[in-house]
Length: 494
Image (tube, rainbow, N blue to C red; front, top):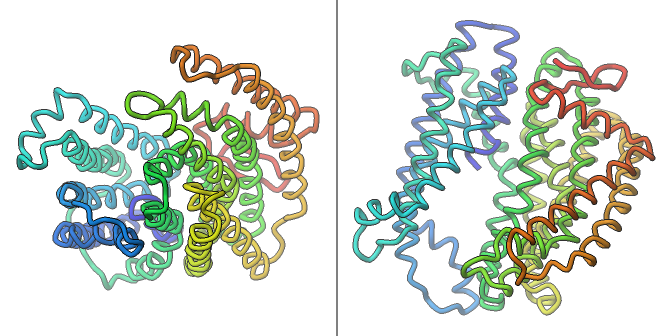
């Protein structure tokens, strides 16, 4: 919640206005104050997270106890939390740096920092690294998990350190300067509270799913299956939908600062169409190929065939909501560009309540049918409500958004996705992706089915003259360019 959106949602529109109205010293003075004010706040939060670590872990387990689960030993989780929680300091400041760079439309470097975070984690998974780290822990906690926790902490610091030189080159000074009374800082503070909740709704819903997943009624492995299913879905959501919303956010903020409301609406329409062009067929593909995808990615070592079935079941219900998750990301970006963080927070609160209600109903009444997929289905339904409500409220307040044209595009995309689904299903039936086949053979078959399905989708899009097809390839050819909608409705490089 701290590192993935709320800081950027509140900081980018304000800093963009500074760059437009008061470039130079005034803008960078504001940036320094934000950086060091956040450093103080994050340091306090990190310290509290360590001090009250046992209570933090207790929040994750209270529903388990309410439903009659046996008391477990959570001491290792508390110890790991002591190591991991301080990472919030580095990840939060890295998010500040990312927001500042995004305001200059610098996307490559901030996007690369998670790669090095993951490389740090991977390095800590090797015995040559985790064995020495394990020896530092008390005897009862000497497990490779300790090294992975240290990897998260180091990875957060690396994310911040990588962005510092880029800010220095653009004029940022890191001389400490704090002011909680600065008008710009106070404006960000007013925006960040609702933004913190609004952008964190997905994470909060995932947390709610976690609580219901540890109910004693759930099959063993439900919590892990939901985690892995979410990771697979995030591969599409994070690598494409969030990337597009990140790229258009500064453009929308500049358009609002210049009073270009109609251009901003066209930018939103473009982002929604181009994201749906990928996420709708991706959802269909994940639903149809959920079992072989999970099998190839995870069914190794102690991850058994039963684990694959559990994870594939959860992935089915998460995939149903993939287009809604992606669309919600685009429309919340539009709200934040207008410096309205309260509306997404209010709608998110209703969506969160709906998720809890659905989780309870599914667990109590439909568990035999839904099993471990019930939390995933509850989140997907809440996501559709979230997007629908935000779209209705924005149109009511600011006027038409070209919904009819967008709906026509989505209809053509759905037809193309259906054609792709037929190819995908046929390929799955022909391939016979048995778990006892060699891994390379499984990978080859899944890859072949995916390539054939994607080719059929693009062919159908070409036949139906979907304009998103040419726009998509234009974005691929100009990956470093910032997409911007122009008056004629096309795309140009900015």
